[in-house]
Image 1 (cartoon, rainbow, N blue to C red):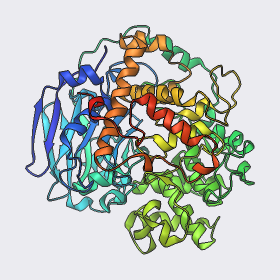
Image 2 (image 1 turned 120 degrees about the vertical axis):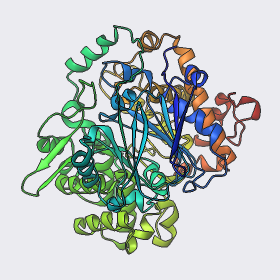
Image 3 (image 1 turned 30 degrees about the vertical axis):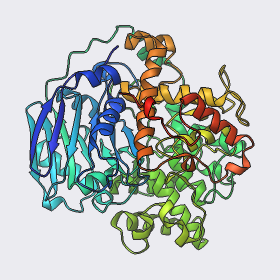
Image 4 (image 1 turned 90 degrees about the vertical axis):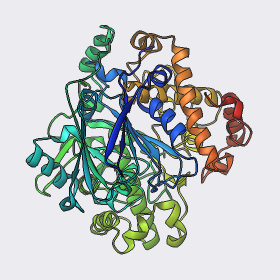
Length: 555
């Protein structure tokens, strides 16, 4: 089975030392990326750790496909205990850092302990250099990137950076790479902030020799020539369809249809796109560099999730205003989905939907933990009672845009996902939208056949995150192509994903997560939800309480 190569680099931040060790056995069993990081975290992080404690660890990792020239492979994984959910969480980012990470020669990098002063870690094939950077305290992401370029000649594509939000321990702070790409969900930027790590840089000339089948170029060629609407409109292309299905969360989830959709839909974003945008080695080029000269705003995005959070869910029908919110989140290092939804919760409490000046002010206040922003920085699950609004989260993570009250399988996916109400954990929404030409679609309503398919999708996405292969490769990656690329039967590859999901669940079980956390604010509205949940547990081999039996924990 194809897998990553290279040692684990462990960096002790307190002692400012580093060491390497052979982890070939883990690489062979878990491929790379999320899988390897999950195994390491499960075995090395105390089950009862506080996410902001020095005992928490952060893992960065790539996969074997970063040795290829294939589209959909420009991604990197980060894993730690989330300060937003309290569970084990993996997040991955696109951009261009993955190849630079691989050039350093390590299969994974582990950060342990905490530094006494603000530092940048320069990771190369010769080891780690610790640079004290007290003058960067409070610096924005662009300011930090500019410093690294000016002082060291290190471009943005070699960096991972924490903004003020991470330093201030905002529970949904992101880690930014290539300046505008985010390790977004789960607040892992705040974990770096708690460790006094302002940035990491990567480089070297020691990328491992991993042989990728030449037929990878079939996928690359198809990605280059396919006339996909995402190449023009990104994920925002689905907004009108969601709205037509009464499946676009609006006004802090109180409604499912937005009358101002035309102002924030795919056509609106396409008018602001001024060039192509992509990730390393990818010909699909689905990113959205946008600008509005009159407003003086330039950003990358927003994608569908952010257009929902800062658009329909906040009562905003102007794409330029959503672009401004997106740019602010990138500047300060915030997960734009959680930031937008949290702002929407505040707007609901104050009856201020559509107030864009207030929205942009709140984003800055959250990042700096000033005024009401200090409370909002804790996230919806911790602040909703004080605001007097409903808790629209699962396991503490707020909802993505794909509406589980309409797409019932996606609703089930939100409920059981180990990292909370996240759409990318299984990408089950892609199975339920009535898209032309899909031959594996399920009806949006009901649960028949969906628990089994959900498990397959969770396992497949865990494999993708270990490979690492972008989830937007779904129209190009057939079982036969997985087998060709990874040199193993597809069922054996799905078994890798199963081990990853099981390890995550077992870790979270030890932290007190069980069936009571696998629920939805609207579970009572979904006929058959509890039966589907039980069917999911049974197929996973877990107890009726959603707990992994001791005999089922992967060794």
